[in-house]
Length: 97
Length: 496
Image (tube, rainbow over all chains, first blue to last red; front, top):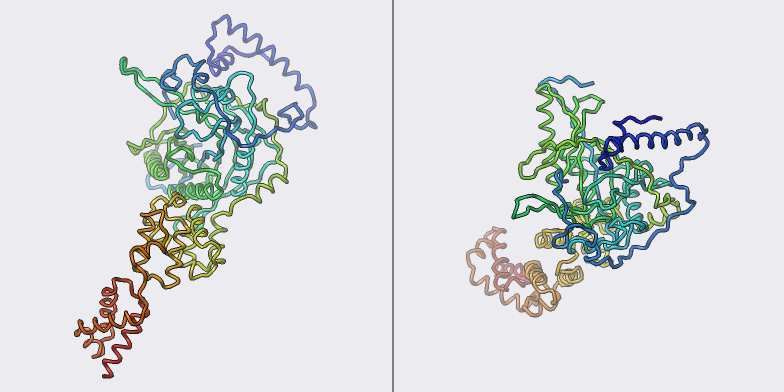
């Protein structure tokens, strides 16, 4: 399962990653090898096995609808590079809702 | 294959709506932050979970799931026994985790329908699916006054608020139907008490898919998605505009590309949106932090048992239990706030005449005084105080004319009940024979012309005498007694 440069570039764009030529070549090799590994699963006959989305045999724990205190504004903004009047300030968003 | 059309071709409009509903819970979908973000200062309802900090785990809000189940059941959907949550991956500043927890291939419920009325006819539109997800944060746009450069401000209070997506089948055939569908959807949500359904506040949002096809064709045209439609009026206006736009393009021999357009309220137009360089690719995969959700049939039945009565059932019951006319029952069940107010006013009283009286006052004077029906529950005129007014009317202590005066006083003075108002303003009905007979005598003496007219056979002249007597009694006379005594006195004059 060999990936093309275009496929690697596409995935990088989705992940907002800029790759150098050298990085792209290296990742293409690594990703191809990972996919090749996963391809081996196709050799198994899974026709009698139900699709599985989770391998942990647990039912989810549901929570009662009770509101609890949130973080302080200082804590929320602690990791924000820029803030303004309690908002997190970011570069202009163009094609807004 | 493109369908060739020519000017004069008759088209059929095909519309499907995707509706997003904010569920009315106290806390968010996957964390304990307050979901009541509307008037909160920015970023004050945020915790490590909805901020997407590393190492945190989401925990599902049971009330949100149950509200979603109720909505799905009310839409006649089948709740799927196996549910799971998936990650929808994309980057946007209002999505701190880099993904939205949603449901992809195993949604909460499928295959329902919504019935609604258009022009007196009942229509039915299919519901494809109903699924649960979380809301995103909100962005504001600002301009740096020094440089003039634009930037954005992010408030994450809304991030993680429970959201329901209701995907409708392309079964709607006109802008009017789309609006009626959405209005009926909101009515249902409000009766269930699962959402405020307020479009202006974003609690109810709608994306529209619309295409045209030659009448009689079974195929669908390329669909255009319209976003940014934030009111019921805008839904109808945007569709009227878009249908006409597509018709012109087709008539001119053009083709409609599949695209997303935004509705501009100021310009009254849909505008093509800048296409993204990369096609939308959300790379859905199962949310590893949440085990699949098993919908136990016993749980579904418990939730069904707690569902509020739906508009149609309530309307039928109003007719059956209180003897209301269809039209009154329909008016009183347009909104849950009104239906609740009506039943609270009756307070278990099943007499049809009392129900009719209550219906008349509520749909007449109270509606006129309360333009926002949803705010009826907050009216200074509580159901108990209106009941006080109806009791006085029933007991003959006031007549209809003075009842209006008492009604206005009830609205203006929230602390005073109807009996106290009647007492204070001396509005008690005069039904004392002696007092009325004295007034009648004076009125007859002062109005020789109508008396003569009446005695010469003009029965209608009596109306003027009733009016004059009522006026002389300050509007407080008991009309029945006034009529009886007038008849007696007139008969006496005729005889004498």
